[in-house]
Picture (tube, one colour):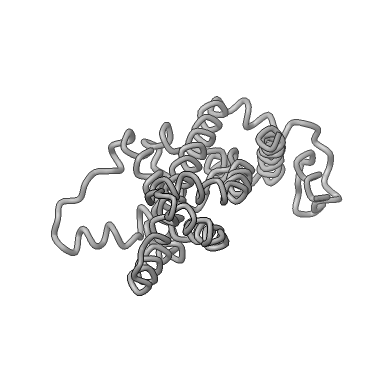
Length: 252
């Protein structure tokens, strides 16, 4: 935590973190005077809200679906295939070196000009984020569902409750603490963009910045251009403070 002092210093290699001169709040000026602060903050928050809503709903639905499958073999195979994307690096989908572009060229198909159609990228990013996280997220909910007392389901079934009524009246209320905890953990990063995903999928395509640029990618480009570590640390601190406030409000 002591390293956050870098956000208030003009960092030099010779002075290091502790020997560099104090810089006040000047490191924050770049972000707010860049003219892009509002845009990237809006994109970051809206994308994360979409990720939280879509991922929570789909992961919960998949976990419930898996518990209702009677065939254990089919359940294990399905779960394995859904978990596989979690281990795939975002670099595999890179705009420059990803295998998808190479695969399209290899089969001789006409490439779809996604990188010249900015408006489709919110849907692309939401889909890829969901596809990559569906396996891991559903396992967490699946573990919570497995902890529900089976006698409650048997009692409900004997009283005439169908599968949807059992899900709505027993499963969801029983795992609500898990849903709330995972929601709070997600909200904790609502002002932080998934840098790996955004940078590898979008790259440095300026045409897409209006729809895809988030705080993290803007900071990275500025860092690589200006080599200003103090500015980068300032933006990181700014994000953390906003996330902390958001967590407190959501928890309340």
